[in-house]
Image 1: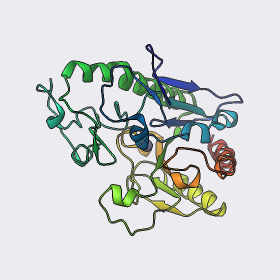
Image 2: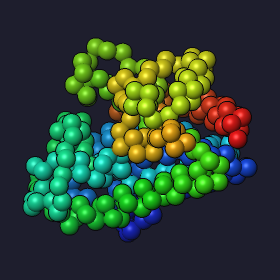
Image 3: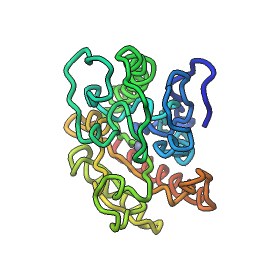
Length: 286
Ligand SMILES: [Zn+2]
């Protein structure tokens, strides 16, 4: 984590170091460079709860298996690229938005396009100007989306298909955070294909079997089904397959201190094995 002392690149794009396969991965929430104009009242120690910390690092070997890995550098609490552009809570605005807005349940919980609450704590003691928010869209949201779509289109043009993994991590108390009951047991991995609609179910099955074989518990679409990115990319009829993978943070870090745990490296090794496995699966279709 760091505070930016100047402008910075919105993302990092890691390209294949071996012969490419149409595997495109993105980590939209692991960014931890905090823009100068954030002006939030919350300390970074609280804001970091929103980060999918280290997810980029956990999947860092994807390019060595022929895939592309796109990683956001900015934090999701500043602008969330996994939301539609109209998912804005009107209550955070100092003035009317410039077009029609359609706030979803995420906005109601404080986690829309522009977060206004982290782990139950208000991020601002002020209303936000349209201009500053539009700047977050043009400087971070749009460049991230266009970098992702460039990779998606490139894969489809070159190989006739794309397999997209949208990579995240989730707090171990996610059911409580989602107001879905605190006593339920969260799986180690949650695979989200928006109830079977965003990718060939074979893809989901292969990943589920691989992770179960490593000894992890795996759930589908409970409690996370996938939001804007898998919904936009995942159109199997157009040979675009997209799956969200949520990792339980307790597998690899201390959720209070943000320190990596002793199991970090073994998880990284299992994800490396999964990437190798997916390369073989994709090659069998080419
Ligand atoms: Zn995430």
